[in-house]
Length: 361
Ligand SMILES: Cc1ncc(COP(=O)(O)O)c(C=O)c1O
Image 1 (cartoon, rainbow, N blue to C red):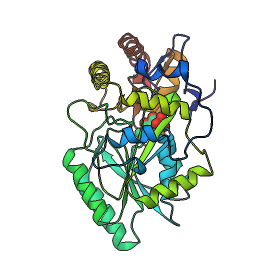
Image 2 (cartoon, rainbow, N blue to C red):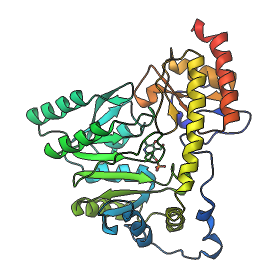
Image 3 (tube, rainbow, N blue to C red):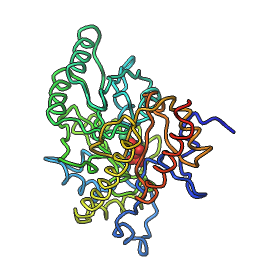
Image 4 (cartoon, rainbow, N blue to C red):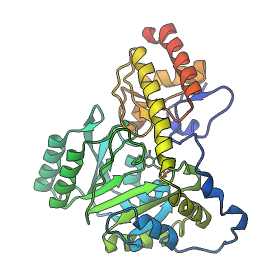
């Protein structure tokens, strides 16, 4: 049996009785409205590199004082991240990433020929004093960090950063000439309060239709940036790489922007119910974890996570992700993007594993 050392073997796996706590994509379908245009849709030519105007217009209405010119439609937030980093490139540029992190971040920074450095999250939360000290001392000793990535609600932590911390970071980065890449793909999946969106001319906001509208496979995301120079740079790179983002997907995303807000509200209730169920279930199994306030992940501490991943997969037909893939080798990530009955079954399998062999690890 091949030892599992990366999540790639799990992506897209389902069926055969597998319970997957692995996947980072919603299991529920998108709003029906997104399919409405399909029967009549006939466009096929290249689209604008920057993205369809109707979609950019609709997005600009979601942000204070924004115009359609400040948006670029991308192949998911993934391309938005890649293009943003490459647009920010400077020789020897350092990018400050949260740790634990969404697993693509360090790769994206390296692909952009820059250097990833990290700020530690404490039980999922930003330690503001520590971050401030890092940013200021880097500025005193070198030319300073080129950018910081903020991801709230976060993957894999499920943590939502405190409002005053996000506001302080907004000011700290502005005052010290550090760009903010604000990855807000989970901004609508938050239980308890509204999210705070970091603002300013030094901010690149990334988002997509993958999580809020369950449209991962259509690959529609965007960058919102108020600096025209950055927008032009990103369009310049995209012109010579992926060119326009899929035009049919963009029309479908445009339909999604017209869907009543209740869609998001209803989804959120389902996520919250699942969050409560898995959190309570893992607590009952005596695992050490914090209660996530957003996204759809829990991140308990476990002994020997890589063995847990391999044992659960090969012996209990259950997928979980090794925390090391996210920069925390002491934890295991469980996604709760699966229905309640499957969460229940998965918790039973986990309980069996914990009783049968985990203690003897
Ligand atoms: C934090 C974070 N950012 C970005 C992405 C990429 O999302 P997409 O490219 O589907 O928009 C993901 C996907 O899981 C994510 O968790």
